[in-house]
Image (cartoon, rainbow, N blue to C red; front, top):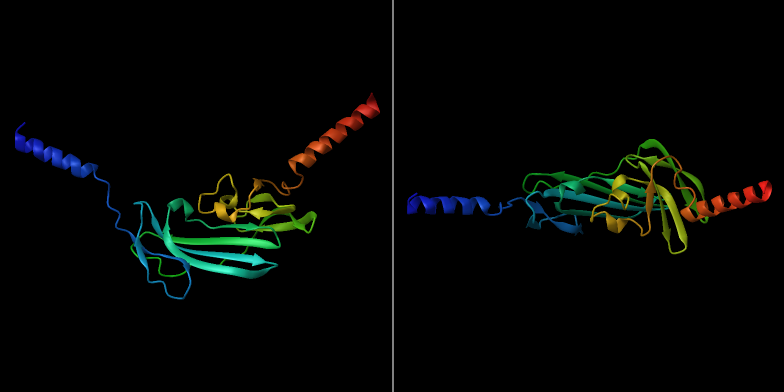
Length: 207
C-alpha cells in the first residue's frame, strides 16, 4: 500500500473514532423565575433531549410550591412521577423533545385520575386512612421522617429501587415501596413482634 493511501486510511479512521459532536441546543432555566426563559445551552451528552419540567408540591390539599424549569434531560428521566402521603404530595411532570430549542413551553399541568389501587396513609400517629392512588401511582410507600411515619401512594420512578439521580432528592430517606393494595401496613419490626407473640401463645396453650 502506498504512503498516500496509508495517510488516507489513518485520517479516515481518526475521524471515525472522534466523539460525535452534540449540536442539540436547549433552553435552560433552572428554576425558571419569570415568564421568559431566554438562556440556551448545548447539552453535554449526545443522547440528551430538551425538557420542560414542572414540580408541584401540595400541603393539606393546596399548592404550597410550584417551580418550572427547562434543561437537558436523559431519556430515562423524561417521565412523570408523584408521591402522595395524603397531607403531602409531590408531582413531577416532564415533557421532552428532540429538536433544537424545542422546549419553549412549560410542562402542562397535572390530571388526577384514580387508578383503582389503594394504600394506607397517616393522620397524625394513626396510619389506617385509605389513600386512593391516581394515575401511575402503582406502588404503596412507607417512609419514616424523624419520629413521624408517612404512608401513601407512589409512582415507580418515586421509589428508591427505581428512581434515577434526578428523582432521588424528592423521595424521603428510608422510603420503601411495595405492590398490592394496603401492602404498606405493618413495619418489619411490628410484623416480627406479632410473629413472636403468636409463637409464644402457641407454646403456652399447647405445651
